Image (cartoon, rainbow, N blue to C red; front, side, top):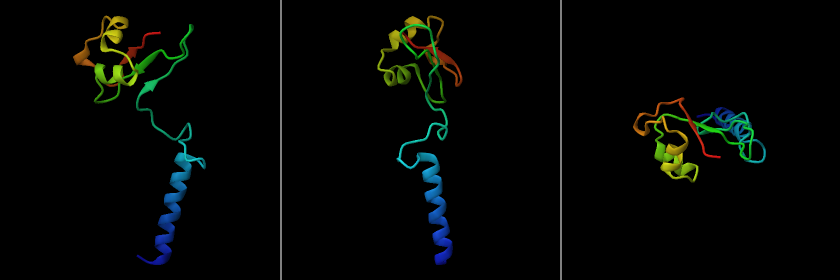
Length: 95
């Protein structure tokens, strides 16, 4: 690879990194695709309301990520069938 082409690749990587992570090295708000909880405003003491299931997630993995027991999620989602979670499905979180 020629030196000019290599420097172009390095510049492109730096631009992508800075665009995605920002100058501080932290992800910028609009740069990441959603892969976990979707936080929605809710009247009450908690601002988190529900979780949007992503491919491969289970009731147990969601509960662990939220520091809850699976029984806590089942209690606030009585109509939920744990072995039939589908991507895009909303799972209510306890307040």
